[in-house]
Image 1 (cartoon, rainbow, N blue to C red):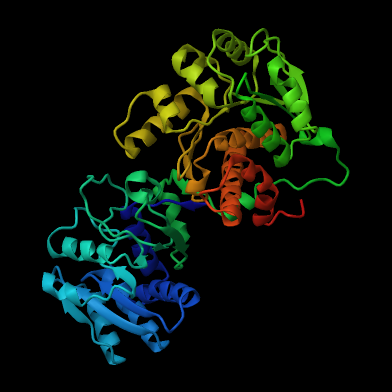
Image 2 (image 1 turned 90 degrees about the vertical axis):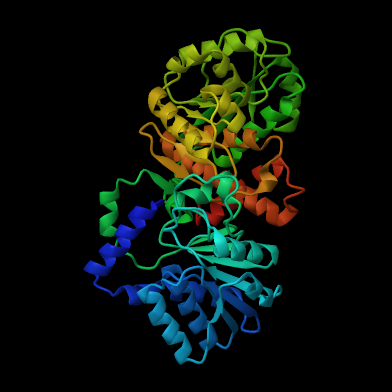
Length: 504
């Protein structure tokens, strides 16, 4: 996992490294910019024509270093200085001289008419503003950003898309670069994960620039980005001398008349995730459908004909409840019975969440460590309205701490909050997953992991990452437009493989 640092923490970490490595600020800038250069070298060929836009500060200094190294590697480079201020940083001045020493002159842009010389077919590297920005881009800087965006070119942002704050709320009218790729230094920034600003990030790449990690423990970091490496370490190896009982028994409570697809998707996902046994508790209308569709699952006929009713009895190690169950009175009573009887963590999704929203006293009875998986609208029903992503995150943290549950808030960048209020963001997944049944698959994945005795927070982290990776693999195969929820299930095995666990 990588800690998400504030602008202040990033500054302090830079200073700590400069003082204690020790290394000069100019040489640290060189090291960081060379990491960007190496990424560019691996992703573009020297026949590419590249325009680099540099602001007058240290982010611009990074851009000048990149320009020098690209020029020395025979790229066709045009370097522009967006001179919205004449106060150039010391590091900028040093690197401007170094660039000129290899025969590249930077072109000063300080009037709107100067922007007419920009080439629409160039690859653009922009380093106008860095993470220290604390007010909206305005004046000539704003005009330059708007011009770059209007070119519809491929844009690579250095550290952060120019015009974006690191960890503060933006006004809807604020102007910022819309990047194709963002090469960020050492740690992601909180605004990368929110819908108000995240669309401007493009594909995120976190570059390790060798900042000393000893200082991070002083920052009390409580927000992290999940990584392939950290998630891969969570996966349990299978024992040669094991049997189906070793890997747990999951009970999926799902389905009602007209919604048996939800039961099929969630129970299939629990199986594919590795649960040794899966039983589906479903109304009688779904028995034949399930037994003919998924021969590997067992079916526990519910007393209800078309929806859940009667008393609940636990069969297995854990349950996942909610997909397709409906909101009927008998289902409400059945859910109350489940929550009152369960003592171990469970997974709650979909209609079960909506029932909780309408019967909030039940929240106090949910077993500690349970995993709730709302999408934004379901979450709003649980906690009330919010005006932006920062307020939503605060409410999520408060909800998790108050009720001692894990909340998996499903979004383009799914965010997980634990019972201590620590948050984890996922950067895998894609818009193709915005399709009916995708959440049902996640419920099955999480229930299957709990059945295998994963700790709830580990189940949430691993489950979200497996699910998102499956979505990315399915999109590569089918395209985002044609992706359906069952495609995710077929890719769960390959997702394990992507995490270097194909031999498990």
